[in-house]
Length: 312
Image 1 (cartoon, rainbow, N blue to C red):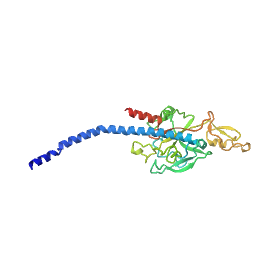
Image 2 (cartoon, one colour; image 1 turned 135 degrees about the vertical axis):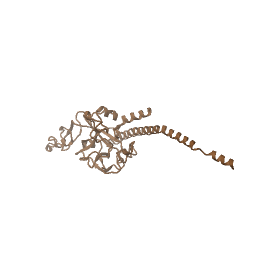
Image 3 (cartoon, rainbow, N blue to C red; image 1 turned 90 degrees about the vertical axis):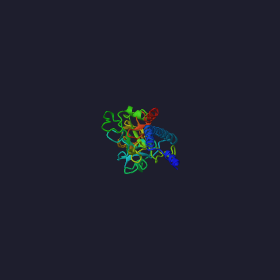
Image 4 (cartoon, one colour; image 1 turned 60 degrees about the vertical axis):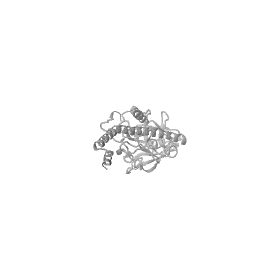
């Protein structure tokens, strides 16, 4: 009996042994935590870069297959496309020096490339990404619209005053997007690619979501859809009437009110017959995709982050 009790006592672990084992496990956990965080960051960067590239290809395939851009992008505008403001749940991007601004775009610049309707954003939603829109709004060729566009702040860019993604010049924006930009002659209008987009089920199965790294910026709290960036020429446009009268304009309203185009007796149109860049006959076009994070991230930036994290 005494021998049995002795063996039973020896089969267990002493308090000192348990303490040593726990200290070893805690030490190993401490060593692993930085690596786990690195794995999460690398997965995030790789997924973001892949989603940007996949959506970029899907929009281009839609354009080639259906000869135009899809309708029903998320407009990123609250309440109204003619009087609303930028969607309040955007992740950064809307402060004094942030990367979004409001621009006025003629509807014909959109309808000429196939965008005939847009989704109005739901400014009172409790789910900023998956319940982001409230209605569909038709886009008319005879109306000017307020839309969200990328903003280059120039010398007024102050990361101290407002650090959420201030873009100081065209070179910085070109690096982010992986495309050469010219903000003096173009507006870079952005739309969200949500589940209502006309391309869903045609060239891509589901609208991708960029999941933020922090809970405060999660899909429920901030808009995490990927953006489609369209280059739309500004200034030096031509409005052509029925008798080929051509005038320059900066908005569609300029065309409609121009005396040369409203002379119905001479056969001119009361609404612009064409909306292109007068110098080079350029029309609006899709150029790339981007993620609306605290700082704007496009294909160029996402790939750079991905390869940098792989090398570290």
